Structure formats: structure tokens, C-alpha cells
Amino acid sequence: MDNTILEDCLPSLGAELITEIKKFGTVKTYSKNDFIVKQGQFVRNLPIVLTGSVKVYSNEEDLQFLLYYIQQGESCIFSFAHLFSQDAINFSAIPEKKADILLLPIEKVKEWILRYPTFNKLVIGEFQKHYNELLEATKQIICYKLEDRLLTYLKNKSTVSNSKELPVSHKDIADDLGTSRVVISRLMKKLELDGKVFQDGRKIKML
Image 1 (cartoon, rainbow, N blue to C red):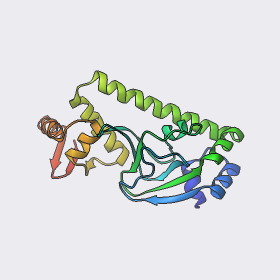
Image 2: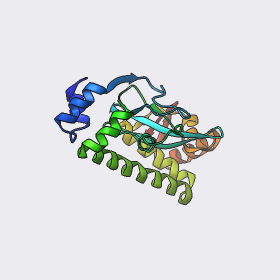
Image 3: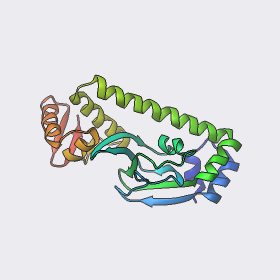
């Protein structure tokens, strides 16, 4: 395992814990849309993103709903939440493109939370960050029109990918926002007429 990548992604953990992570952790490369974790499975490892970005979403009665994205050095709030339970997970996580994921055994994670204040701080910090993102997502659903949610979604996706060009289909957007492709196509046309985006086939450019 590359020390440099670990130290870049997790700079606050300290040499001793980094050594422990190198000893017990495993780095696995996932291709786009591979399942890192899948809804209905049981948590055996805590995933931490070393490279790339990961989409976390939930399926309820055949309706997919985007929860948030995980980027370099971050882990998943729901994985933390399932550390101390025997329940199956209620979300899935897939890379937006090829990603290197650090997998930490659950039993070691429980031990490190108690032994290393820096690791405990990481857990609490990630929990708070993603909790706030979920609150924002809930507020978007309750308080904002779908057009506003769509524009926010595109801006967030642009930030996560660090690009103004988004290779995403109307169907993918509809799945993430829990609506139909027809509705998204209509709203995308309106955003284009308003000068906020430009569409070229399956690519969307933020203006």
C-alpha cells in the first residue's frame, strides 16, 4: 500500500495508525458502476475513497434516490452507522469512474475508534458532514421546485467531477432525482433556453 496516497488522503491520522492501516487494510480498484457496497448486504469493511468519487444512493420500491457523493479521503456515514449493528445496509455505493478504495475490516475500525482520538475525530467529522448533506437533500425535496433541484444537482456533479462537461444521460439524472426521464428532458430544455446549460448528445456543459 502506497504511504504517500494514504498520507495525502488521511493526513491527520499519524504515523502509528497509518502503519496499522497498511497492515490490516486492503486497496481495491473498482470500475465505473461496480458495486463497492450493495443494498441488502452486511457491512464487513469500512470503505474510504483514495482516488475518484463515489455515488451513494438508495432504492425503495424500484425508485432510486441519490443521497450524496463521497470524495477522496472520505467514507460513508451509513457504513459508520452500521458498524455496531447486525442489520443489512439500506444503500448502495458505486464509483462515478474508476476509483481506488481502501477497505478497513470492521473489527479493526471498532478498535481504532477507541485507541486513536484522530480516527475517532475522523469518524465524527464524516458523520456530521454527510448528515448535513442529507439534511440539505431533504430540504431540497420539501422546499424547492424540481427545476431548482436539477440545477443544484448539476452544479454538485460538476464540483465533484471538477469539470463543467458532464457525460450524464437524462435517464441517469431522472434516476438520481427520483423522477421520470420525460420530466428531466423538459426541464433540461428550459435550462438550456435560459442559458444555464448547453446540451450536446449525452453531454451537458455548465455555462
